[in-house]
Image 1 (cartoon, helix red, strand yellow):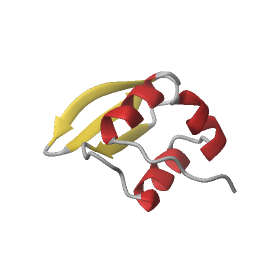
Image 2 (cartoon, helix red, strand yellow):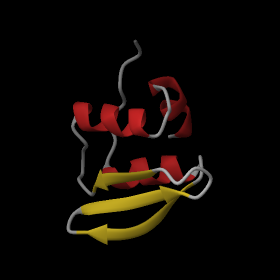
Image 3 (cartoon, one colour):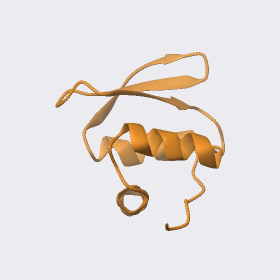
Length: 73
């Protein structure tokens, strides 16, 4: 398994926008993104650095692999 990159919440949003996710709203410190293609939603904390487990869960919710996500950065 490849090493998980260290990214901020904003960097994760930029990467996921390349695969069709769009920023919808922000609730507290969480940014809510939605992909119209399949209706998937994902919440991303707006933190300077996302914890590894949180980032891995976000990647899994988006049906991506760590390699695919790293290429989007």
